[in-house]
Length: 241
Length: 241
DNA sequence: CCAACGGTTCGGCACGGACCGAACTATGCA
DNA sequence: TGCATAGTTCGGTCCGTGCCGAACCGTTGG
Image (tube, rainbow over the protein chains, first blue to last red):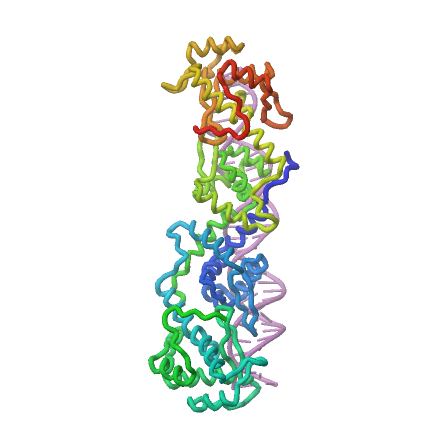
């Protein structure tokens, strides 16, 4: 009869429509790596203007597929939860050629490199940035008792390592900056910048041609252990935030 | 880099697009009951013209979501396989209000009624039609040795039950007709029509107002058991084809 | 203060695709 | 044969929505 209540074809179709766009689908597949990506990174990855990315992200966030974390002028997004990730993986596994939610080798290694160590503005990020942050706290170079602050002892320790902090301008001495994962922080501000500059200048890390990824040298491993008590982030070391 | 191979956002989006239409979504949810539906039934169910239904079915079949079974002028479709059904159920379970892939009570009971017994053209279908067919074979009223044929004994048995078969026109004496499930057959042709006519005339089954569903009466249960050895299809009796 | 940069808003454009009616084909039955 | 019905094809219309550029906003750092 015409008055029958139809099953939720409406809602079902709406859900599917979220993924029925090439760009949004590309976003979601990229986000399967469970990292938090910035809007620009996704836009660049999917080859669309930032304005388009914004619109797509609004839809996906509004529908509860993604969550956002605002961090200064950055907008990090990631998959809402494990259920969503599973849904996307299930759907992706039905795609013809190969159940490939895995990516190309170069893509994987590039991601791993970025995840391990990279620059963020002018400071260190990635696993390296996060564990450096932890080490600085452990060694009482900075403390988190009220906000985040450089300790007098910390300033001496840094100076002994060859890193002098020149107070200048309005830039805060030290700031926390949200890492890619969206769960952990690394050090920014004057201190973060100074450490990064020194690490590059001293050959602790090497820049990579077309990327923000950094390569940690043997010298870097040694020196960072000596000055900051930093353990090398070998293999798949995991840190909880 | 611009030359990077993007993950299969393309195929992923195409898959999602299949479900991103209200009508196709309604079809798929309806088909979750695993029955084979005809194109007209789906069109009627989703309240769209048959021409639209045809187009949607072509897409879904072309994409491997549905399979079709052509039966005379009917086009039965059902979900391709269990994997597809699971995919749809997974997606449907993410739809907001309630993980409702179940349907309204009236809808369920109407389905059950139709599933149990109904007319198909002028003959009996549904569980009743299928088990009647089986009973007719068991009692050697018809045999399936070469095609399907009415036996001389069968013709006498039917006459004794008050059902006389008048050979007339070009309509075949007996035919098989694919049932809703797409797996089993019931009896059509002159014999099928005569049995159905007699069942209605004798009060073995009662028609239903706005539906092709039939209600089996106590008399019908008794008589069909007596004449055809038909066991009453109580409760959820399942028959394998 | 200014410059640089990440992100947003807005308006216009264009394309896809869902819808529908009407004519047509094919099957089943009299 | 003819009639009724299931399904298909075709053409036209219309709406949604993805895309993009340009101007704008807010944060960061100098």
